[in-house]
Amino acid sequence: MAEAFAGSDICVAVTGSMRPLLDSEMLHTYSVDTHSDAWGNLNDALKLAAAGESGVKIAFGGESWPAQTVQKIHSHDLMAFTGHSRAAYPANSYIKHLPDARRQHWLEDQQEINKSIDARAKQARIHALYCLPNATEVMSNQLQALLSQPPCGIILLGFGAGNVPYSADLAQALTLAHQHGHMVVCASQSPFGGVSDNYAAGSWQYEYHVIAGGRLTIPAIYARLLWLLLRYDSPTRRRQRWTNNVSQASITIKKR
Image 1: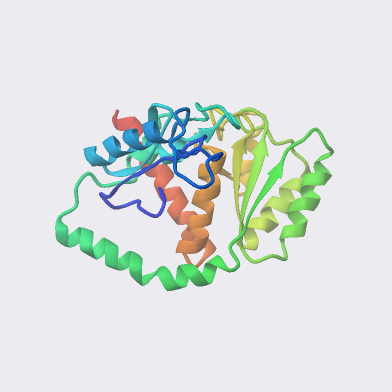
Image 2: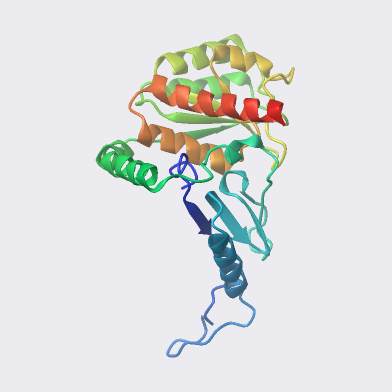
């Protein structure tokens, strides 16, 4: 949703709960579970929606964050999610206010592409390759196996700030993946901090068409890759769109 509403001034607040609002032990009547976090989360989401600030935000556990920065950090605790607001992206993804005519044009444009999005959804795939202390040929073989597939998104889950062990075979596999139209993005296995494209132990991969995920979380990288596969009809346009947003984020940081 955060990717789909980029370029608009529409406000979307998303929430949920770790415990259902209704007591699940009551099968024939409705009874609110007093220990549920649903009502509090809904109230917080309504306040965000009422404020009307452009963009997609997540409200959970008494806090809220831009959707692209949110990470689930606990499988069952009520404070299950966290995020941040310090990155230039996604703050520059939305327009503060659009005139009514421009907003209507934006909506019409989105509706026009729905059919092509539905068609591409049938073959859109995102793969995750998890770096482990294996021989590099393991990851090379995984990449080679994807070369015969339609252009897809591939997430390399590196160590720390983006450390992916080098080998000539892996470098060649990354080059071939790019030539076949795949988008390869490096992310970090660490829950916070993201990756850096100038980190010495992993900088080599960016010479072979890998894209740095920056501070985007793994869920955000997955969602963004999926949206690019659905929204744009060629590998070149998908890569241009990603690079364009990264450039905008860099400009915003410099201005600040």
